Amino acid sequence: MAIVGLGALGLPIAVNLRRAGYRLNVHTRSRSAESAAELLDDQGPTVTYSSSPGKATEGCGVLLICVSDDAAVQDVLWGDNGAGFALAPGSLVIDCSTIAPATAAAMATRLAERNVHYIDTPVTGGTEGAKAGTLTVLCGGESTALERARPLLEVIGGSIHHFGSVGSGQQVKAVNQVLVAGSYAAVAEAIALGQHLQLPMQQVVAALVGGAAGSWALQHRSAAMLADQYPLGFKLALHHKDLKIALDAAKEQQLELPITQRVLEQESELMQQGLGNADVSALRRCYPAHSN
Image 1 (tube, rainbow, N blue to C red):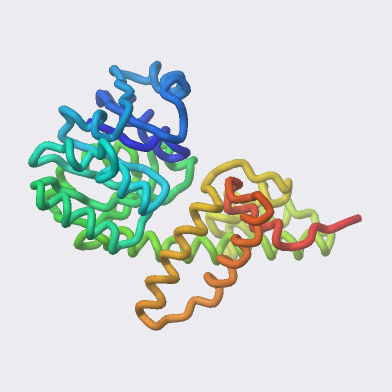
Image 2 (tube, rainbow, N blue to C red; image 1 turned 180 degrees about the vertical axis):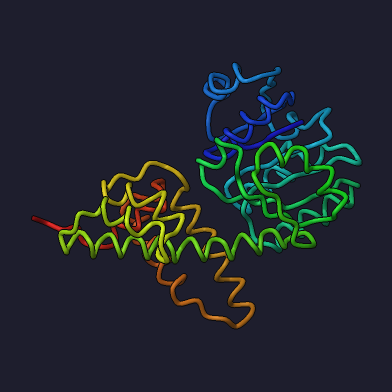
């Protein structure tokens, strides 16, 4: 099979697929073939490094894409030496990227003209889930295509959910990112308040994480906020892109999402401060630190 995209999520996905015994043809822009080889070469069967998506796809019946945005997916499939031109009839594209539902539908339509199947399978669970193979996979597409993809998805995901036609997985991912925005922002505000009250915050978090205030963000990102250190779990700039997709979907429904809009604005401010590549938990930086 072919994989295009060996970023923060794509690389551990590739590692798990290789450990499961899949032979991989890969192409990546985010790291050199040499650095990818250092991380992949001891994990299982042979990996072939290709100079373009089209080259990676030659001879492969399945292509998994995990790239940053709509433009990147378009380029992977239909740019110079794109995979869409190289895929044989009957092939399957599994797109783990987070993109607009309309873009996913457009990719599916264009590939269908070449008798190539496409499913959108955005994932959630952060780098921790990608490394552990426990991602939640949100799927849109034909049931037959999903069943064909299921053995691969079961390697990378702890749960697989099918919501309907192509684009529906992306719609659910938009809902997910709205929830992420609110929960991370709430944890950031709570941490700021607790620190200004000079509470023993590690003890506070331990007390609250199992109660009604508990959340994935509180459990997994409060330590980063307390330390004011934000190693990558999910890149703030990518979440910012995802919130724009969610807000566009809400606008189409004439629905206002004021909390999401405010988090989008906060993320814009942080990106202007050079924090676009930090984890989303850097939202803590939107609130003043306590000074003794």
